[in-house]
Amino acid sequence: MSHDAHGDVTVDVLELADELAGAGGTASEEAAEYAMRLGDDALVLAQRLGAWISRAPEIEEDVALANIALDLIGHARSLLHYAGTASGRSEDDLAYFRDEPEFRSAWLFEQPNGDFGHTIARQLVAAVYLFELYGRLTASADPTLAAIAAKAVKEVDYHRDHAVQWVLRLAGGTEESRRRMIVALADIWPYVDELFRDDELHDALGEAAVRPSTLREPFDAAIAAVFAEAGLDEPRTSIARGGGRRGIHTEHLGPMLAEMQVLARAHPGASW
Image (cartoon, rainbow, N blue to C red):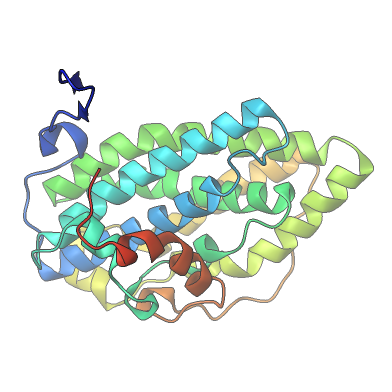
């Protein structure tokens, strides 16, 4: 950053390769769709966590959730940048100038923050799932996806530990914190199944993608270990029908996108 004689501030232009993991590749149509799904999951969850800034139960947690959100923004930028190479769109185009049916986020990531227990329950599922996903994706036949995953998995490992520690703390805390943790897990659990559904895109991508169904067993094992340590039972709930990968979303996504996109749409092309 530099200052001129009149006090104006200009920001040095960074090379894209310095900012984004895996920058430089061009995505096929199928790889772009896959990257869009993962990028939208990260973007939507980051926006949700950002709403906790200045509202977390303690200052240290305010910083922790903000840092997790920033990590997810980084994942979303890399994935949406790669997705955009197939159509000539930037990551900002994809984040701010798509309508709700064009998003591909799974329903879990769209769920509202609720109380802190609900946010932690969502974080536990999301972080364990993403850790397993990115760990496998580092071996992708697509070098750009592999590079993005190699960076992301290290950060998601921290997110996973953060969520696990909070589940143990809330489940082993007061009667009220334990009650809220149990309620939150029951409310989140219907949205788990959608994360592990295969479809024709995974058939088309072959070794370039991770087949979601292959992640279910390690996910269940990791979650079972956390529940055992916390003295919790896996919730017995119905399964949500899902549909986020096809552009069918919960009632929660639209208002969140409206808030996230309003400034960019009101001032298209603006920069600072």
